[in-house]
Image 1 (tube, rainbow, N blue to C red):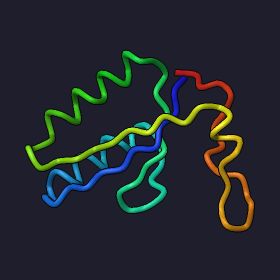
Image 2 (image 1 turned 90 degrees about the horizontal axis):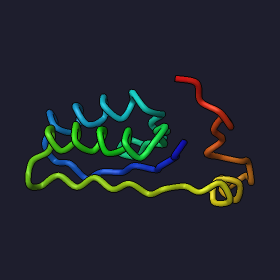
Image 3 (image 1 turned 135 degrees about the horizontal axis):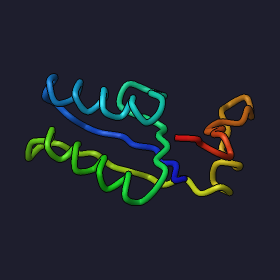
Image 4 (image 1 turned 180 degrees about the vertical axis):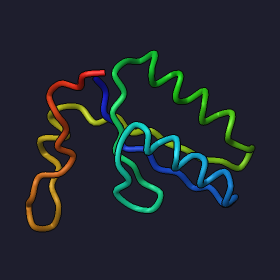
Length: 92
């Protein structure tokens, strides 16, 4: 299982909405253009990237930041509440 923060800068409304809908299949929106997603394997991530590439144009910017276990454990909000809490196991 791999966990990523995905963010984008997309000016085209149609592309932006299509990308958001695809990312929502894999996780949660935490801000308008920021998602926390879970993919079960590198292959699943590659397939997601291929689907997003088909939606993109030459101005589309989408970035994936992988969150390792220790990074997730150290993440918190302003009130020191834990964030990026994902299950230890995902059953697909």
